[in-house]
Amino acid sequence: MYTLLGADGQPYPSETPGLLGGNSDDKIYGQLDCWSARRWIGRGYESIRVFFADEQTAIAAGYRPCGHCMRDKYREWKSRQPGKP
Image (cartoon, rainbow, N blue to C red; front, side):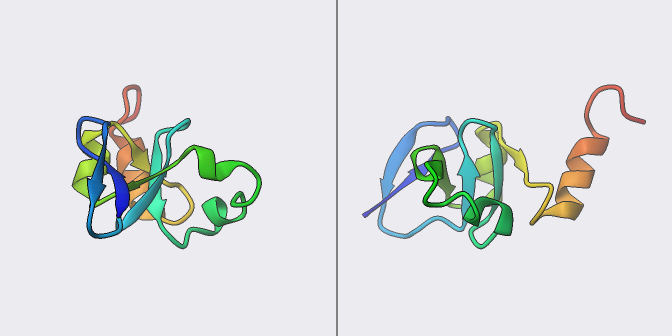
């Protein structure tokens, strides 16, 4: 059994693993093989790592794309932030 975060930000049990990982402190989501996230595994990152079924759920839960492994989506997100043209 896996634990994923739902659109409401609450954990729920799932029979299937998540497709994306996330950092619950910084509210960032990205690919499971992201080099930036993977380098922190074994250094306490496991306690703040969360998983999502899909990108829509991560966004609905208030997370933003990773600037490393999801560079294009991050740039799109960044361009929509207040104060950006």
